[in-house]
Amino acid sequence: MCGAVAGGLSTEGIDVSKETIIQGSVTQGGQPVGGAYVRLLDGSGEFTAEVPTSATGQFRFFAAPGSWTLRTLAPGATLDRPVVATQGQVAEVAVELPA
Image (cartoon, rainbow, N blue to C red; front, side, top):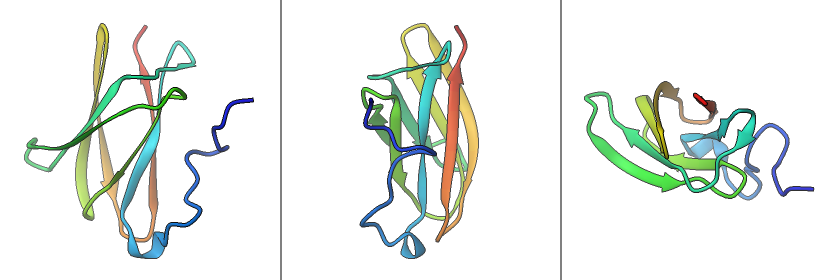
């Protein structure tokens, strides 16, 4: 059994009402991609932050409310996904990389 929480990363211990959270998972061919990098780009396309995915392909950012782009980088694949973050809500993003 992996440590993944159904529906995404656990928010236990986080006061979600006060946070703006973007989180999700990266998969390729239906399998989690650990060690990929997910970048957070602001509305003008400027780099803001980057995190590696966990062994189960999961990632999380604490961001300001607004429109963002997630740029996922893995060997042989790059994918951009738009996301809108709202304070008090968790924006769950499933990124499926092309095989």
